[in-house]
Length: 506
View 1 (tube, rainbow, N blue to C red):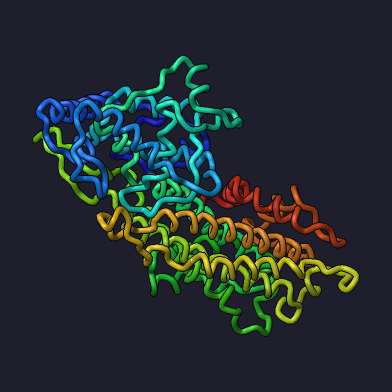
View 2: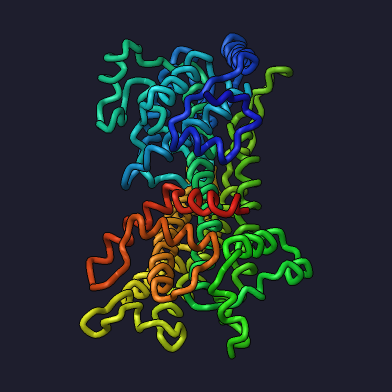
């Protein structure tokens, strides 16, 4: 059970709830904060105050006054009118992360939502009731209005949810559970949808996956070093002490750890090669730069997921409602574009190592890693696939945050497109995982041709691959091997196996 206080959520905790199904609990002191905030909104209504989103319309309609008797209708209409998403539905892990982040923002007590409404959102999360949320439709300012509206509709008995793998009408699920649809009071609809929670949710999952891919890239690179009979000299700690970027230092440490006790390295210490190609020699510098980028992105995200991103913000101590721009996704958008660029580089350099492995002029291994070339193509076309994925990533890495299209009759005249950056990043991560899977398959096949034993970490990686995927002796459908390898990486089986052998990777 994860206890939420609005201050201490991390990317790792988001993954625990989103992907591992961990339930959440809100601390009692946070309920007090929520109640105080809701009481301030009640006071605004009693005093007939003009407050944006409570007694006025939204966006361009901010100057339209709403009579007190229509405040409930206003909040219901807000959810229905803003649920304009298109495209495929996002994954359950992304929905769960979004729900978690919205809960974590609301419990800080600056949003004006009632406890019973917030508690219902917690119930949805803990019962595995996942609203169907279309991927497209957010411009990343005024928050992720469209996806958050879809997330919130089931609370009032509208829209659809996925429960137990089945898509069902929210109203039917509520009835079966004996829960009445909520009737939203003043400010509650706006409190539910005004925030950056989809871009931050997808971004948090991306950041976690990206850091796992950094470790995976070090493993695949170490396997390639051994298969290509590279040298370990470029990973000497003295070199990296002279240029001590943290990610570079950690990547070099990982490679040294993975290569320890290698008989292959010892066997060619005195060979005629003077230097390896950059894709081997510069692994710490390239992988390390991605690591540093992701640590920056993680810091931005962990600030965001513990922040208040509403508009207006309710300040209970002074009983004020202040209009602001905390919903604007620009800080997250820039970071998520950076994430996509940084992670894409792992695949760029990996594809070059793949080319070295399949080209006999570079590898001193059988052409395309098959003994019976001609009749068999071996791993020839896996490099084509890697090249395709890398090239696609170059398109996806174009920053979304440099674009802005005004909305709401120019009331909202600059937007972040941060949610687009988040989903582009997720695609890049999937592509990078596939490229690293290809490199690991090729390196494992290359190692099959070498009699000496590689380093301890490489042995562990090779053994895991061969547990699931046999050595290639004759051509077979390669897509199945790639799918199996990619699933091994997503489940983090590779990292666990290697760390069991050599200890924690950085």
